[in-house]
Image 1: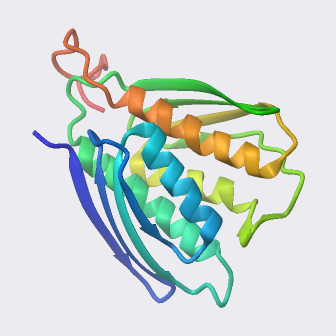
Image 2 (image 1 turned 90 degrees about the vertical axis):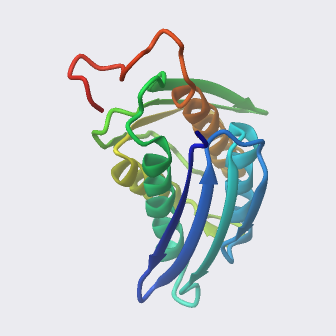
Image 3 (image 1 turned 90 degrees about the horizontal axis):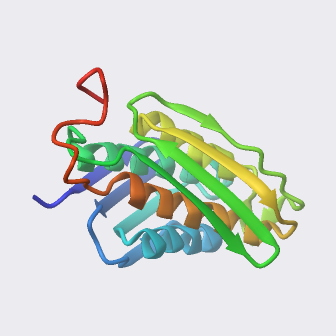
Length: 195
């Protein structure tokens, strides 16, 4: 059974349509109106081997906040919907990703309980047209809509572009691991019997 979801969100600030395939090949079609953010979504799809089609119309005349946050909400919802009851998946994932001088760790638990922790230390306020403070807004939104426990640790790194890209790639690799099936897991990996 193909694990995929089509999610839409329409508000007074954004109009978003996202198609996500968990067991994909890394294909990505994205247009958020923010070039660097498009690059990060493309990196997420490519390195996690997820197929993503994302089209966004946001109030960029205000700033990028609503667009980035709402994409996080929609992506988290799509992850949750695509995984369904989570039977047979590993549930936990982690990855330590190097990128030049940067080293970022991402660890997650698809527990159904949202929690977000990070210690990013960005040296600049912007990368292109993307506000670096929106990294935390994006991942926070994902955790709450997906029901995911998500931790990031910036082990090293000074270049904001590298730190953000390493975070998106590490997130993708950790999510890929957490969503993989393990033949030994017959139900859900929980003593409660549900996630």
